[in-house]
Image 1 (cartoon, rainbow, N blue to C red):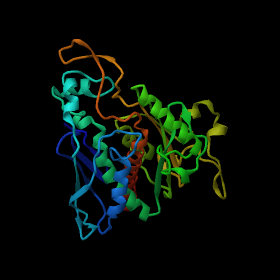
Image 2: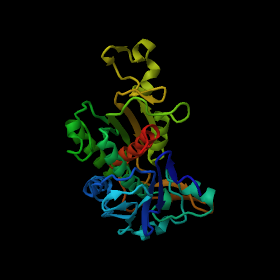
Image 3: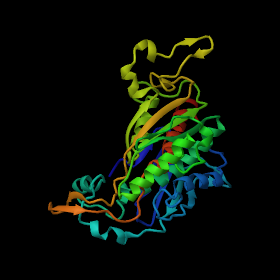
Image 4: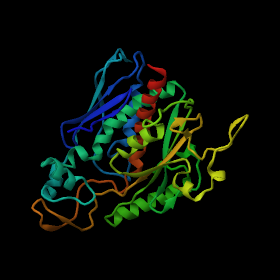
Length: 349
């Protein structure tokens, strides 16, 4: 099976399943001599951790990191850096009833048809649990980028039909939904609880902003910065779309409205979202990601079993009613990995 490696100058390879012994990641291509802040790494893991937010799943995982290689006396050596995260709170029995039934919205059906076998315990390799390994890798990439003056922040701007009308980034992390609008945050929380009470789920939109990037990252024609970021973000299981700058709204604009004009002070706007011709232009990168409603819901749904017989399924267990909140650090992580790889391509290690 391929498809478990991402990156160019810097690569990550993740491994493990939702209910296996552990999940993990190998970073290859890191610079040497960088001191890793393990406390900051643990903080990023806490943001994504199951059970870390009362609006999410009740599965409790500590998500402690074990560094196996690539670090000596607290510094990166330049060798592959391997980390593992133990799974300690699996409840595989929750999935016994659906071991022979395909869950709508999940990878169960396609995985079975492609490989002829699937780990039905929480979705195995296709589970969102895999993203913990990405966050571990991305947290290190983000630390290195921060040392170069580059910062990344993602936040929820929509959950269900509730939209953030403000962009006060000082509020991100101070409410349960990582929203930049305190009033909208309250309504977003209520929207999630409402869906949970109905046995249903809700999706949303996450925006991400990158500041401090130099001009010149990204390679024409196929390794454009936005193309690689799109690949990285859309590889996250729950994502359904991505747009940069004005995005799809550009289709309703004239060129005179969409173009970012320049004068002696620089760009006069940022409709492009910080990227021209696939190359960073020195302005903030801004993109938005559509996140689908969580597939696991307790409402009855029609499906098939592995013998092709029609069945009705109600999914029990510990699931998020909205994955948007816990996907925020995953989006930041994949952004950091992508941009650090592009930095190494241009400037070396």
